[in-house]
Image (cartoon, rainbow, N blue to C red; front, side, top):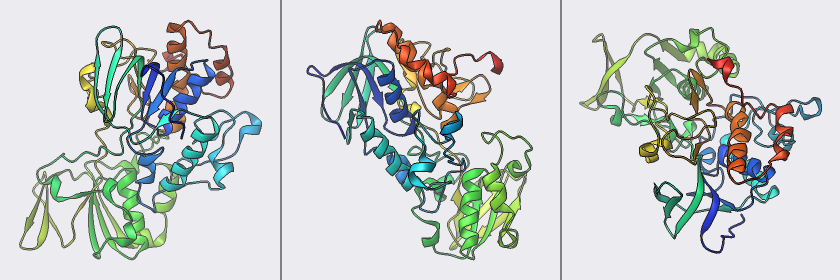
Length: 371
């Protein structure tokens, strides 16, 4: 990676996070004519994807349809198709991490790896970013640190007795024959699928019934990829779906885990329950620089900028506008050009190179359809 640093440690833009959103918005900044910027990454480019369970794959398909003016759903840059370069329709996290590293190299993105951001402050004119090896300053800050490395560890009494699915290296390596999974959305079904594939018995508990939600939006309903996998005969035989059963507590008694529902029903398991409870996200690390919505996500204006900290922008799966959830790559990449345009304008740059983003569905600056 390019690790060149500006002479005085002062930048026009600092991007925190080198995942899909961080690398993608950095490419867009270059297309907007911004030159003095850097991307800070706590580990390596694509680190969160590399930490996925080995068996987990993208639920959004990668398809090289660039020739007809449609961008691969998992692409973060114009003219780039993960499906074409990896020759895989549903890549694993490890495969996609490799793709991101290749893209960052190809576009010569200035990434500084192994740099942990310790503190961010704003004095009304610029940001001071304290890192593990230096103090950096910037006129603008783009928070693109993602969410996978910040899983929810709470949600009910005894939730810490469970193992969050984000901490699993491989489902094949889990010992035991009978598993309880709390949470029946994508990660819960994915865990059940791979455990059942290895001839394990699985019970999934969910407070609702997401597998019955008729919506076509995978942000609130099970994706077609997941629904297809659930149709396997052996999935029906190995997996029990227990709907409308919110869990109130998990206890460990006499060598067994006891799972209690809000209605008082008791379930037991010899193996540690899995908690597919989603992620609290990295935005909690700078929550004082954002107003908070009713659902605890950051409040942003129409340029994805903090309403209380000028110059602070949000990119990635934590982004929300009203009831619209930008939690997939093909959703939040539509806002890269909006952020880059706002920053370029404040720097006095015309950013004419961003107009091409419109024809590729990557410049969504009209949110009226969501209101």
